[in-house]
Image (cartoon, rainbow, N blue to C red; front, side, top):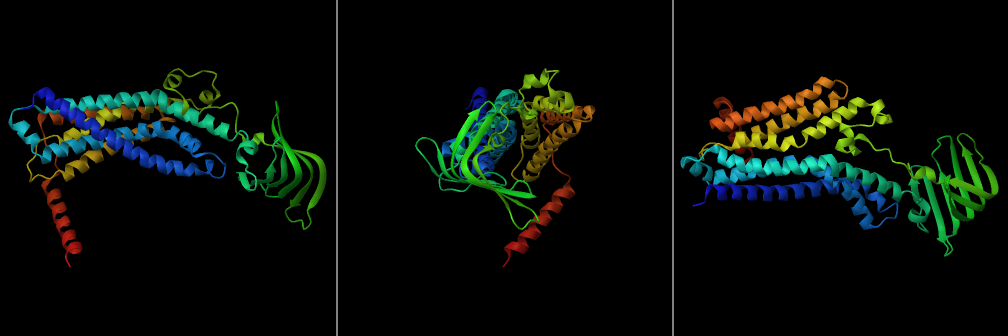
Length: 388
């Protein structure tokens, strides 16, 4: 027979194992959907697959921050359902084991996840977003030498297309075509025999030698053409800001706790700083609340005749409501400070109510008429869609 400590170790190990599997699976799926939005980094901008994976992988800490509490909820529900289906909860209850024994193992798992979420929220998620911003800036810093490939028409920005015939060993470019349609009232087309890159303190320029500039104004039938010996096109405008100004999501936790009074962003939007700070402080608390809610609904022993489906829906609904309150508090708390307190009140209420249910060993079920109505509805739908 398993000792009490062995039971806790088994539940903790099983819960954390299921948590890791769910977390990795959900993060991978969502990461792929997000990464596909930046596929142009590898295709239209000529970057390698390693650069693409490296850049898009920097959002993984932010994804884990959001997904981890949900993955923990799924893991706890899975373990409790497994224990219930195998009648282990009923046997342990009949043997006089207190509900707190099982609950302690889930709390230990929640503490592990809370530490993970807290570390990501305070440092790793902002660090990843900062690296992402810096790396994207570096990738776009030299659009011609790194991005433009000979023989290809490359769109370096919406409305700006460039093409070169060849890149010579000495670094000089030959056969340059540049089309600029950013101005709706004027289209500029530049053709040049040769060109070269020039980097100085003012920025990066594409210096074109011996060519023609054609300007076609809207409403004009004939374009204006100018022959030039030397023409400089500014590429710095496509490189992004060289000195990064990090957004609120890219600030570390201590920068939100002790913001620089001279920070222009903080001076303009102090409410956003305050709302983001409270959202970061609440992040490690959600895994604990989710475990309490899940155990309150699913931890009580039930017979095989007592359905756990409605209890599962109730746990999901309680978690969703708590998270919705937190999200609304963050959004509206930026302009109405007292609303930020609602997320703490909701957290305390969820923890208090959940612990009361667990201690008393209550089974949370909907009224009988609701259960009967849902059962009848399920049977009716089953006969309609299953019957030939």
